[in-house]
Length: 299
Image (cartoon, rainbow, N blue to C red):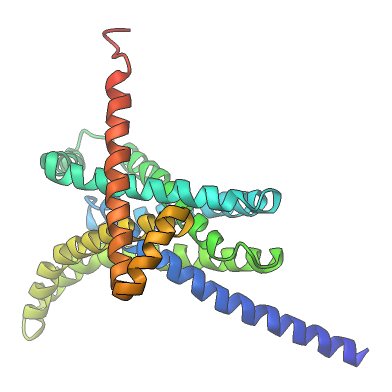
């Protein structure tokens, strides 16, 4: 009896050790996308009055947790029914990442005033006493949760791809750990990011030796957002392109040849080029399809 008990404990310890190692591997695979996730979520919950920022972040975090509760079992079920579907999901997720990256750059450089106009409209609505702020807040939260659903699906698919060959129970525990860590980590950091400028202003008001520190934080907050956005965009192309260069045989052979000559840096550059080219092709196709659709006036 005692021997069986200790054998069970040994098996449990081995399982937990495997889960810890594989969770680290999965987290590293998804880490590249988290910078973009952080920046996007911080932008999504921005624009509210300081007293409403943390409640909005908390509401979106709860919605994100519900998204994970839906997505993790769905991904596990699909992988159990058809393991080959994991590769297909990875390619779809990678393609979406590349599309998203190019679309983001196109919005930034071809339509630079759109994002500013949206933020200005939100701030005007917050300042206008005749506007129902509760309705505006709910709509903003719903939009952020929808965005989180897509981002969470990408991250879970990438994490699933890194543990597809392990036993099912280990897969369940790893994906659950990654989902919890992503939700707590991302929205904990988002809460910190959106309050940096408020902390800076509070320190400025105190004055004294802390005044310059506060002024520095106020200047640092928008730079942090821009830095996260740039790093996230680069990561999107590296991760998305890397999925294709590792799972499409022709691209994989080219990647290996480049890696043999130029090492990890060359392979990463190749992944980035694949991601950018694929994203450009997908955005161009999307715009062609959109232009071919009949408008409401034509219909």
